[in-house]
Image (tube, rainbow, N blue to C red):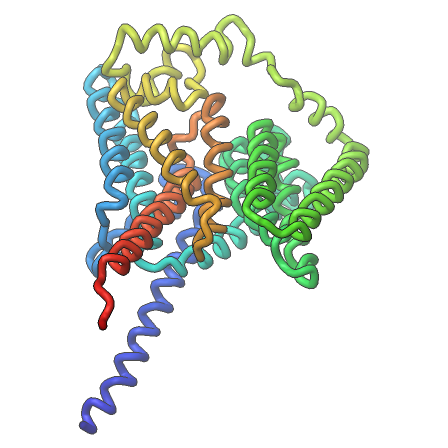
Length: 417
């Protein structure tokens, strides 16, 4: 008896220590996702090790995430087949290795969240911290706040710790939307604590001068507000949303008036605000390449191989659907389309259900919708945070399946007489 008494506390301490280490490992991985200057990024190397260790110690993939697993694998198989059409492999093996790795990160996040739903809060907190740091770097770079700050800009636009402002801006969308959710639903006393980091992240999005990021955040914010309005039956809460929305619009107008007074901002803003840039509508501009690429896809159903399109036409596809056709063939295109439709349909059913994980899935879902639209104008297949979005949504999908399964089991269990 005395042996058991002494053993239990030690086991409890070990379990808490393991849980603490696991949480810290995931936190650090999410934090690293905000620092992608080149490939492979520190995030990639770290996550390869983390996924391997987690797999050795019992990472389980359930049947509820099987569609995600199968479709991502088929998508990458399409890339391998397309690679056989290339005469010069260039950096294609590394490119496809990163593609497959990113697919595994989505599966990893979904599996971890299904096993431990409390991890949602940790992931979102780590994401906000990472976004704050990289936003501050980008803003400091834009204003030349210290020597060497130009490292965090590209083309006179804030880029943070990213190699492209057009990835930096969308990366900030989910933490910004999450903070907006907390602002709309949290107690009034905590509003200043939420508003300050939200302003920094929104500032990072603005100074990235990424039209896609602006549109992404705006669309996600409107969808989030609409979902919260429909979800609540409280007239008081709905009034609060309306009042805060009007106040936010007023503050945005005031902020824009102030910001455009900063030298250089007005010119950059007027240039970037154009719907079509010169490189979009030129003879072999982005829109012309779309038509050429889709015609080529009819002639080359297996694809032409990753990274080949840019070497032929001078610029990459800048369209995730065209990129899927060119780099992953029709097999990759169909699997990517199926994954998108499945994610949207299955995720939609979770939006208005009262679950502990629902707020996190809601934020990820509205940002994911924005990324689907954004993918029409830019390649998103190597965006680390895009695969995190997939993992967050599919983790919720798996949890909902488990929740419904438990309800059916309870209903079928005979009650004792």
